[in-house]
Image (cartoon, rainbow, N blue to C red; front, side, top):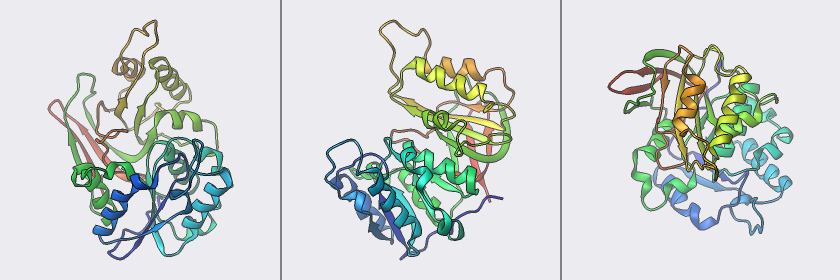
Length: 304
């Protein structure tokens, strides 16, 4: 049984931390202002205001301490990660979830935050939100449907998304718990205590900035690890900024994915709006969803 953190009420506090890569504070300001406009108080972690001179927002110990404090803070009802990048896997095994298990809160983010979300799902059966982070709020983008989907999710409103069909889609209808996130991180977690089980689940994947051969390699790893066996359904999001090698790989991203999944009989949706770009709907990892892949459209509906 999946445990869902309480949905938020006006006046609740949302914590913001940077548990992985560095992000300048000024790039978080629109996010902070918007969360306050939505009626929430904002509590800033120490990692949001560091003067780091390397890739990470702070040292492993500082990032661990900051995240731990937010996880344990009874006043904080949700934690929004400022950005992803890389770094959560360096601290995940040192995080204590003793208090968090008793009083879970929504963990919001994507990219490297997949590590934390997969860990919560696989080890503790606690739901989280794969959703826009701080950069998504810039330039009045907080009014777009993707950031607004985060607002709706925090309020407990059931999601109902629709997207256009794709040539490689596999028609069908299915229901199941939704799991997934960033492909490279899920491949990275294979065989670890944070590894997710996908049997009878709807799996979603997205990626950014990878060479085509590496996408091919990671999908082969997932396939060999049995992650596509007995899936209820598969959702492919954006595979943005994919790169080719000097000597061409010879296949597009869509062709690579199709080759790995065409022999399975579950419904498959390509180009769903979940990605590192603006098109990034809020999805509840651990939530129950119905996926309907038709010739004219694709529907993803949250089941309460």
